[in-house]
Image (cartoon, rainbow, N blue to C red; front, side):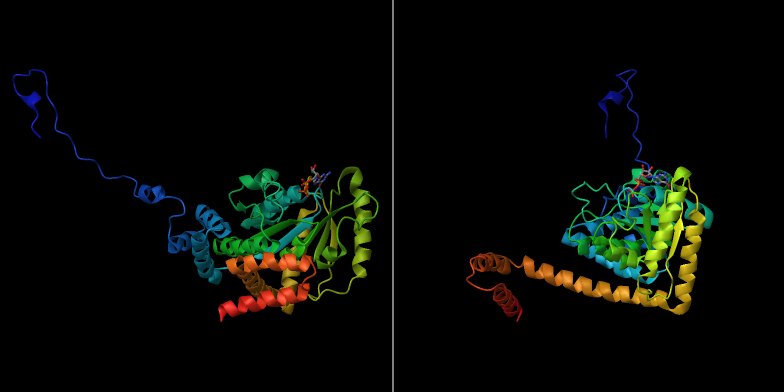
Length: 365
Ligand code: GDP
């Protein structure tokens, strides 16, 4: 471009020739600028298999999303990661609030990473987490040591939905974590309800944290949960509490004898420890190792994993059938009418249900 200022009559004014824009020096900058969530399933899979935690986290966010387009990407990622999964030891951890789950997971996790050189993912199932704004379980501040450890991946529970939905997402997260190279997975839940069964259906070892004190030792935790446990560990065996913890352990041992022997052929053990003072942690880990090699030898390990895969297939079918049914606009409308008829005894519940299903299946024909 001609610059009139360059005319010799304008002494002292000189416009320099511009330079062209230099190329971007950092070749990664372009891809880093890409908007979050804009990657292809292939890019996610490639990065997850390389152990990229950021991509792993984002993939988990996609699978937790309610948006259809996110879910379809997530499904593809999960399918492709499946062949690289399955190689971790999955441990379910439960106990009533206050039993010391956070403290213990912090201690166990730090121990397995530092002493046994494992890579650990800590996940949670807490169907009530939306009510408490996602923080009773999986909150990083509860596991201070672990959250600073570069070999740990901590992910809070998917936010509320049906228990089945929350549990399925956690199970799918396990697959992604394993594909990313995590060889140990903890799945935490509060020991007060149904979520234990869900956790039990996705882990190899089910660990129940108990505490001593407060009268009847068997109170506060359902008998069914004790029956599912492969190991019971009595926490807070420190200071003046040691004797009480030992007594509680003896009571649990007696109680376990009353249960039918588990299908694994393994006799559940009862140990005492202190999560806070980190006493007895290695013994717990030895027990888990021993269990895993025991069930790998007798074939129960594969049997349990296969039954779980089967269970999740049916769960998934049930969930999708139910959603499909209840989300149909025609069904929704008719349900309201039938509901009122049932309430006013104009039609029996059974007949209303039959008519609804007939209508649904006719629509599909
Ligand atoms: P959670 O609700 O099951 O996650 O339990 P927390 O880990 O939050 O622990 C509940 C309380 O028990 C906290 O005040 C902990 O400091 C305390 N606690 C946990 N583990 C131990 C332990 O090994 N010994 C003692 N004395 N206290 C503990």
